[in-house]
Length: 352
Ligand code: DP6
Image (cartoon, rainbow, N blue to C red; front, side):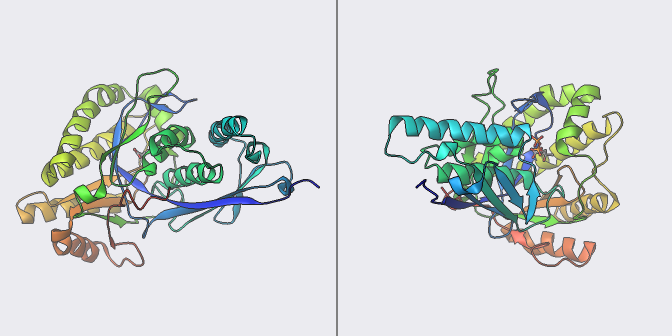
């Protein structure tokens, strides 16, 4: 009788929020970026994707994926690239050890749940693809490092490669045509700077208007400002940001975070037709942060916005009242994890 056994593994992956943004692809097929980026991984206690990957000969012929109980299309090139690469790694393990079950040929059944709004500019694709790649790697018992897996997750969604690590993470754009050096690396673990906090202000939980994938393609094709950002602005921001993290220099960290977010949204505006991710509430959040910093006489809070209107505010624990308290009362009622001060995810806390 054929083996109908169900093999399965589960994992969770955290959200990361970039402080130097990825925007633009030099190779859309391999998902290679036009610039490097840096992010902070947020605690899974607050925001995460939980994924179970299973395979069995009893699953029919097709790979399937359920996200928050809705069936997703897995035939897209990105998901297929992740499946293909992970199966190839499993298949070479099977080739070298004949006692291993032949999982690489079995259909996959993936079930994922987010505990936060999907596609609201909250990096759901980052946690999603990181969890998918990690869950299948666990199922296949692959001896891969987070950097190895980041190379695969990047092909699912660029920002996902940074969610394979906790703490402070850089995605090095790399220079090779095959993308083998376009991977995530740790800049510092969460324990290096444990007082960092993030506050997420969900301005709108609706699905965003222009997806990052298509938005950045139109930017690359039409914005003249974009070239300057990718070639001049981001390399400077990368250097300043990595130094600020290593030295725990909050003022520089915050200044670069805000300037990089502004630079990214400027190239969105310079895209033709223009892309508007910020709305009036986003702009009031910027003004409140400016007022908080003015009142403090130094920079104690930094705003950043991804491809949507929701604000993420970074600050240090000692300033929680001055920052989170003021933002919450200025911007109205917030419930659940919204408005909660979120810690940085420990490297050790990311499931292997
Ligand atoms: C603004 O990683 O979602 O959040 O690679 O096409 O899936 P794809 O794009 P995605 O883009 C994220 C853009 C960003 C900035 C960032 O996270 O660095």
